[in-house]
Amino acid sequence: MILTIDGPAGAGKSSVTRRLADRLGFQFLDTGSMYRAVTWAAMEAGVNFDVEAELVPLMESIEIQLRDDGVLVNGVDVTDRIRTRDVTLNVSSIADSVPIRERLVDLQRHLAAAGNYVCEGRDQGTIVFPDAFCKIYLTASPEQRARRRMEQLATTGQFVDYDQVLREQAIRDRQDETRPFGALTRAVDAVEVNTDHKSMTEVVDELEEIARSRLPADYER
Ligand code: DC
Image (cartoon, rainbow, N blue to C red; front, side):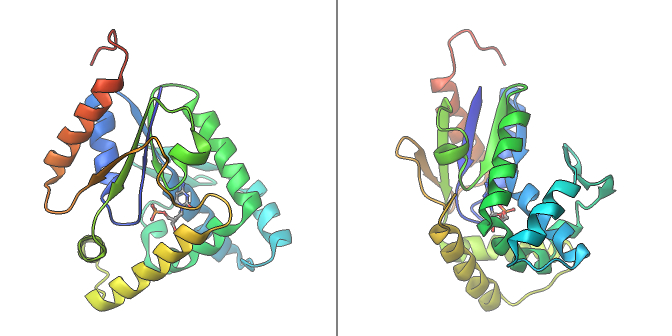
């Protein structure tokens, strides 16, 4: 069974996804970390992001492993490296590439076929898992999202001005929403949840209630 959580950057998807998956006894799939892992690998290899002929062989030469505690690319632990501001500034170009998206969508379907998953990203309910039993669209105001992002960067020693985070976030939102393939949009059958002024526990409680109301009656946990 698949539950999808889509929404813009900073709406709280990652932390909420892990906690919700834990409560339901599901595994979780952070698909943004896959796009970030490819971006990190492309930066390391000095590949020109705009040249598809360079991107495709790179994609085929890397193995991405997602673990509960981190992300590996060809066996190298890149968990922290894929969260840097440089990767964040470049990841949209990678996410725009149709051949990369096709490969990552295949990988996501393959991984999630193995069990019960909460899958989080931008296109999970619309493109990757249109038949998911439950779809959530998680949002928050731009100001709240920028504050969260700033706090998250600070925990890893990256101190960035609030106005700059807000500006960069607006650019990313536009890129996410206008991507020709896999653009961020609410699936018509998704439940929209706004996380403004709610604690993490309140949001997870709300999502758990929505999920349980859609789970088969005989599902236990
Ligand atoms: O959620 P995140 O910030 O880690 O996502 C990183 C980037 O990847 C972001 O620019 C949007 C993109 N992305 C995507 O296009 N499709 C997904 N399913 C997940 C993320």
